[in-house]
Image (cartoon, rainbow, N blue to C red; front, top):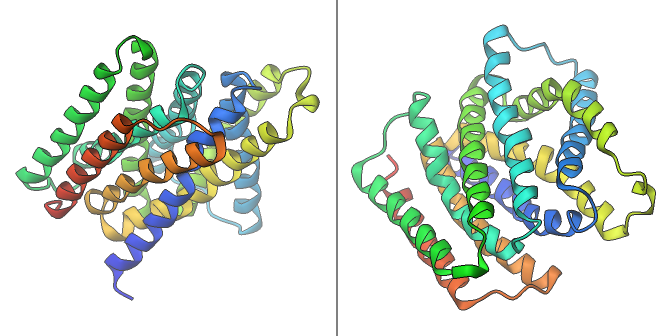
Length: 287
């Protein structure tokens, strides 16, 4: 099988897994405090990751790799989940999902800053057009949208793009699943005690859907999804494979409507389609 095809296949599996993150988070933060939820998902995934590394007897990362893994942890393990959960207290999963269309451009920008080849000019034109569509969508929502929550989402996307790009760079030498496992383990000494400290007293009385949502984002969104995603970015190239994220808004909007019964407006659909077309064009000129 062609190396690029393997990269796209692996990346697509990662996108499919990540698409359930927003709806699951929306369900969970209706019961759990967003701070506890974000800490707990990283702590649970970190314990599982530590067990995997121990059983498979993986060598410890070098000092240089450890610094890069801390960047991955800051962006993908800590920053993005926390800011996302805070925003989803007030905005719908469908609204937040549209912002995911900005992730490909954020990932490529940080990838170029970290040494990847700079794509052609038309790539940046399509990516910028997608960003402008997103800005117009956010401003067009009027008083129904909180500027603070949209800024939280944009910051979350920037941090996630940083974590994706740094993780992709490391995956070329370490392997995709090793990168996310070590990033989770490095953050575990902080996330585990903080999650226990912030655990609500009525945790055992939490609803089944909230507990299932926490389990999903811990096992799949925070751990297994990155196995496929980082592997895909390393094989197929950050600029090219990252464009597969254009599918995530569509999958996420469908899940939000199907599982949560949220209203998906025509404006949201049109914005997602426009962003998708822009990112498709960007992918065409990624190399």
